[in-house]
Image 1 (cartoon, rainbow, N blue to C red):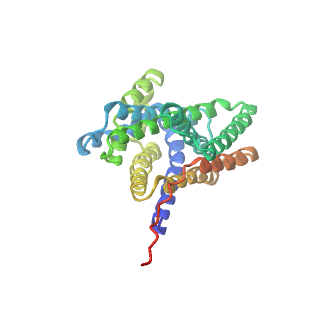
Image 2: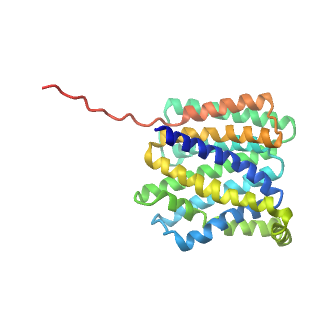
Image 3: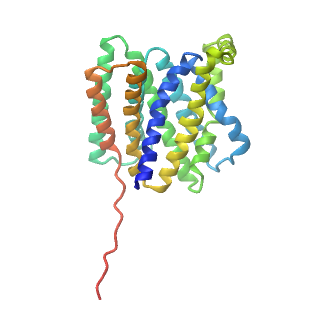
Length: 302
């Protein structure tokens, strides 16, 4: 991969790592489920009118939207709202990687190599270490909620994979944008049922005041930089290079998330959490399938 594309991959990791800071700020101005609904609604409205719908099976499109867009962000946003540290959230959400591999093996009969099994085992050990550490400080619930968010992401990954398998000519970026059409309705319905219309309306009124500007900027970041720009660049890189070459750069996301959270919010992870982070990142990297070797023709001398 050329240096330019490596820098683009690192930029995406930085954008996605800073995404958790934007969520932190947004949750100070909006109820969590309402914020999640706004994030996707702002993308969904122009998508419906401007982007051609990819001709993928509707069940996989809905499954992608429910897994990635609904379940993931319901539990992630609620977890951060009830005390999940911003940097730690960026790390624990990486549980989606081993979850995806395990679900692929269980539901799609994809075979796991010994290398993948070891990698998944290491990642699980790291996650358990964080859970045990948090349980001792009575903060286990946010970790469990974030893990469920990672599981939702994994189901979304499988649905998107099946969608592109059944419609190999579909545009992956169009699929990502149309996925955003699914989450707003269930997210807003959950928000109205649990957070109440009064809280949502109060948040909207406050958003148009000077005090609400940080919340609007956070929402803008989530939509424009984290979702549209980040996903767009990532999709471009995945088209140019094998997935096994590009995917490991996503491991920089928790590095950026933890570093930015420490720098901006003063969050200092404990020794156990730092060691567990190294184990998790190493396990995910080990469990990432390597690209198949490309046969190079050997010139035959006359």
